[in-house]
Structures are given as structure tokens and as C-alpha cells.
Amino acid sequence: MLRELLYPPRCLLCGQLVGLGKRLPLCANCDPGIYVPRGDRCLICSRPVETAGGRCVSCRQQERRIRGRGSFLYQDGMRQSVEDFKYNGMKEYAKGYALLMAYYDKDWIEAIENPFFVPVPIHTKRHRERGYNQAAELARALSKRLGAPLWEGLIRIRNTKPLQKMSAVQRGKSLAGAFRVGEGEIPPKGTAVLVDDIYTSGSTVEACAAALWEVRPEQEIRFWSLTIRA
Ligand SMILES: [Zn+2]
Ligand SMILES: [Zn+2]
Image (tube, rainbow, N blue to C red; front, side, top):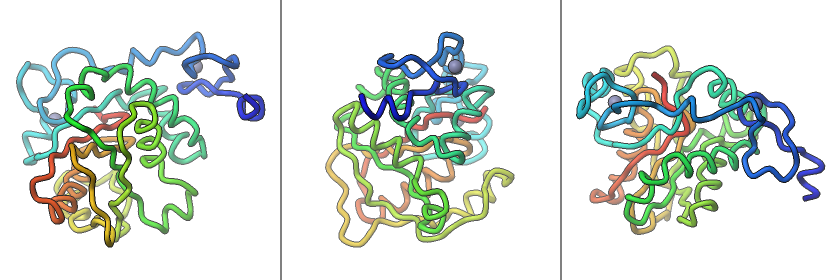
């Protein structure tokens, strides 16, 4: 409660102050439901597609081994929110995001056998600059909310140039070998759920999966991203 008074909760989507003690950190004007992908979704990445049972353009162009879920579309208010979460110090948004992800994708996560959450790591240099890893904040919040283990054993050994303007093929090349399992780290039993804030081409989760498979080739892996780019 003291924390709430010192840092009154802000609306996840527009940043306005919201009343104390509200279950969801959202103002009366914002509805996260409008960012939930509607209709048929890609079998691999869950992006909206035109025809049922198919793959999106991106997953048709690149062989993707990791299936998963993007809870919200990376658009408008949600996009602004994620930018604030990532670059403007709003790491406390993680708790609210976890609540929304667990609410909208309840059926999806409940169907996964013994999930444990694995944040996509950032390089220590970037961590020092930003002060936190947004994916780790999110994974921690999901782990708490859903009562599933958190495993932070993946590390990023190579920093990459910003990926946003690269093609999927360039991203894949840039990320190959960028991650590994830390010395002495052993993933728990169950399904690894890679957690990230934005899913674009899947190159990042594929590279994380490759690192996990190096220590445990039979490891089941999914991804769960707060947002997905159209
Ligand atoms: Zn709002
Ligand atoms: Zn797809």
C-alpha cells in the first residue's frame, strides 16, 4: 500500500494515473481487448492470417521450429506502452502485463505441460545502460502470477545491432550463436516458455532455442510474447 501511494499506478496503455486498489492498471478509456488478435491465427506464431490452418507470410518464408503465442498486437496504444516499458523506465508495467496475458491467454498456457518461464536475455552492456531486462521483468511477473518456475539460465554472449530494420534472414544470421546456457545452469523439467516483449520474425526465440537444445536436445520449447508485430 505504501508503495502504491509513493508510486500511484498508471494506466498500462495511456499512462494516466488510475485509482488506488484497482485490480487492473487500466483507465476507463483504455481497453486492452482491442489489441487481441481476432479471427484465424498462424499455426506457428499466432499472428492473424487470412485462412484457417495456415501459416503467416513470415513463417512460410522461414522454417520456424518454435510455436507460441503473442498476446497482443503491437499497435497504437499498446505499442506506445511497450516502448515506455522498454525504454522509459516503466518496468512496473510488467505486473499488469502479466495479469493481462494470463487473462487473455489462459487456455493456451493451461494446455502447456509443466511450463517454466525463460526470459530472452539481453547483453550485460545493454542491461547496464537500461538498468533492467524488460523480458526478465515480464517472465518474473508471469512466474509469480501463474505459480510456475522461473529459470534465468540463458545468457546473451553477443550484442547485436538493432534488429528492427533487418530482414528475417539478416536477423537470423545476426543472432546465430548470440545466446548460450550459463555455466552450471540446468533447466528444470517441463516445457520451456521463452518470454519476450515483442515477437517479429521469430529469429530471437529460434536462437534461444538452439542454445537450450545444445544442453538438452529433447527440450520442449514454446514462446510467449507480450506483443506481436503484424
Ligand atoms: Zn488509459
Ligand atoms: Zn507465423
